[in-house]
Image (cartoon, rainbow, N blue to C red; front, top):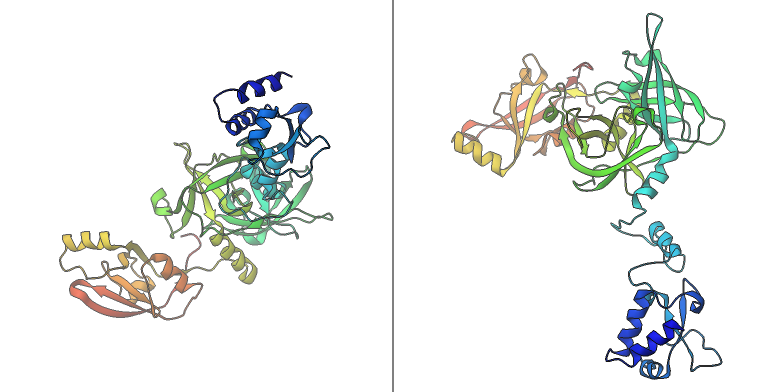
Amino acid sequence: MKRFRFLRKLSNSNEKPFTAVLALAAAGFFSGNETTSSRTSILVSLPDPLKDSLKDRLVRPAFISADQSQLYIFPSSFARIGLDSPGNAKKEGSGEDDDGEKRKCCNCFGRDTIANAAATVGPAVVNISVSRGFHGLSAGRSIGSGTIIDADGTILTCAHVVDFQGLSISSKGKVDVTMQDGRVFEGTVVNADLHSDIAIVKIKSRTPLPTAKLGTSNKLRPGDWVVAMGCPLSLQNTITAGIVSCVDRKSSDLGLGGMRREYLQTDCAINAGNSGGPLVNVDGEVVGVNIMKVLAADGLGFAVPIDSVTKIIDHFKNRGRVIRPWLGLKMLDLNDMVVAQLQERDPSFPKVNKGVLVSMVTPGSPADRAGFHPSDVVVEFDGNPVGTIKEIIDIMGDNIGKQLNAVVKRANDVTATLSVIPEEANPDM
């Protein structure tokens, strides 16, 4: 009765009748006993003056009662402007429309996006525990994380999680694997690559194992949302969310020596025990393997891109180890701005638009024997124009002992063609 009096008051006011009804609907006045369905429609009793003014404005009802002077049906969206019922909220998060049909939602981010991504991968995230001991003396346990990537029990993790004692691949060390559902298995370290810090552990189960889907990391952009999952400080089933801060953070930027590596940088909270756990995109796909953080700062975590991990897994399957060709060059990608600055400093610098600058040549290396010099600019490699170090690495692939021709530009635009034969890189480099 109170709502009826308020409606009547509005109908006699200077406000436009239709606007008044919408205002009431937005305020939630059309609810309670007058609601025929919380999901589809709202049943409203209207005073005659307001009813007459709305005759031509209202959508025709799906059904009309015997007393047509009293009842009209409003779409439920009028009752909660900007809000959905719990059922609709669930559909929105699951990519389902009002008819229950699946629809593809491009770049959508809702309140359930992070939770859905974590729920998709969560069952496949495991805790890995390794007993530490020296000369028969127990020294506690090392804790890390991993992800089941195959129903046969293949687990992806970090080499330093399972290889802290310098276990060789042939030693096949044993680890304890605890799943999210509480099951515990004995795992075997079947492969480890210390350079990339990637390892494979295998478990056997008589019951089905949950798996996580591997995505792709080359489509990630700075600012994309990601979720870090794992067991930090032995706290299993922990997730943290953040964004991708950088998609190609170089190992040299972090002061790491050895061969060139690239990492995904994220501001997700990563702590001791997160190593080996997955970095997941909003589609619930693994896009990286969490590997380390900067101890002196917050929000500086790093992961191995899943595209690099996939290549490593292929090497494990095909050859049992990772084979990397080595030239003995330290190089730098060039762009227009860098070239302009170098030409300003040295007018004899070659006139190029792009290329890869050789900054150092290791004495006695394949590149040294081929005749590479510091300040050379590589513009072509194995018959392909190149502008980045990554392109040169991709062209080399895993070719060892195969002659490759490189075209370089030198001071005063002198062009030289060099033949180089890559060697296998020392695993300790």
